[in-house]
Amino acid sequence: MNTILKILLTAVAVMVLAYILPGVAVSGYVGAIVVAIVVALLRFIVKPILVILTIPITLLTFGLFLFVINAFIILLADYFVDGFAVDGFLYALLFSILLSIFQSILFSFLKDN
Image 1 (tube, rainbow, N blue to C red):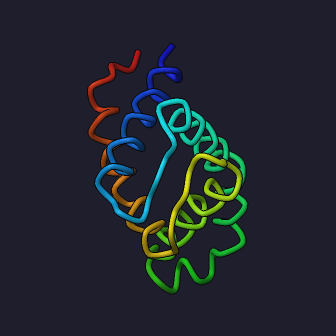
Image 2: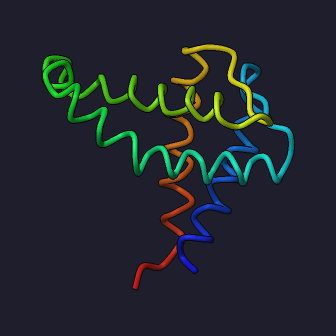
């Protein structure tokens, strides 16, 4: 049940960010839910592989390269989901940073058992 709530809260954050950012578009509520699911799956599957492959550059940049990995995850979600569009890397980077902030705020309201 907690996972479903997190997906729905992420979909709300995606809708809000698509409304705020001019370079991000989502087709509707169902599209936002699909984007939330795809981003969660990409973060679960692809992100650990990318983090391991880029350990040297991540250490060299004191972890700031993780922002680039997050933006790449958003661009992959743009590629896989038809109702989701990001205009470029800069918007993907800004979207990923703001999505992480919104998620941490929204997830703080959920009680963990």
